[in-house]
Image (cartoon, rainbow, N blue to C red; front, side, top):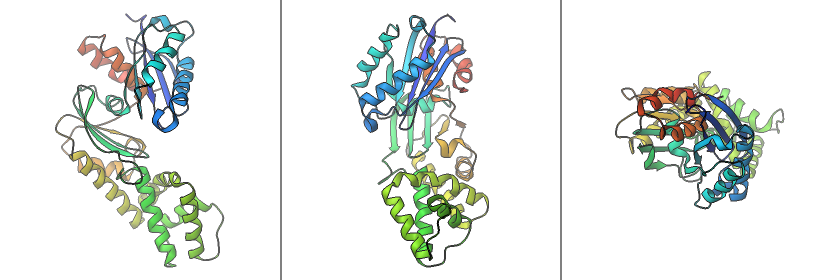
Length: 314
């Protein structure tokens, strides 16, 4: 059995990862490629990214050893599965991957329990109830413009709004203001706080997604005692837990996404608000997809015992 291989794919909006494991959990290959979300970047680009990562992760000539595959894909579309079947066949894999969304894969990266909930906060934010490793109910995940409360984008936008408002009133000061201005302008400083505000507004309007990069400076400012930053992180945590409560019934709560998997004020506030729940942290999602592929071929107790080996990451 250990001569057989399984393949896991984690294709997201910013990158694609492919993990190749033996059935005993041993990792035999791992690779990264570009964005793999077909809804955001197009079917062709998604297929190309997954193909590139698979080609780099799978040892040459080992396609015939692959007995199962699972692909977790953000923005999954029906047209992807037949295209991936062609890619799999080209490297000698008999059957294409079972395709699913990225939410169940993120949950499986944090728990071997088939039923529970996922709370994810990265650039976006979403909560989901999982049953049998399948998405049953979802909350938020509505995008940066109208939703994603408590996400990295939400945190960054809240910080930018607070700093721009303070600059507009010529009273910007403190750690958060310094970090936000530096993030946008570097060493450039127009004369007058109103002029600084205008410059930040123009830059944010030109590239709104750069607001998500402010989540880390906000966390740093909160850690240094900036009151505005501290309140933003607390409010983000409250939003995230409120979203989770809409879907969570029982079982573990898996925290995923950069805002919640890295130690910081938002993660700590969320775990405090979830006191009494079983809270775990997502590991490697590509490895989790490979584990789900292997799980169908292994006894349940064996699959559970191997979960950490698959999801530990490279």
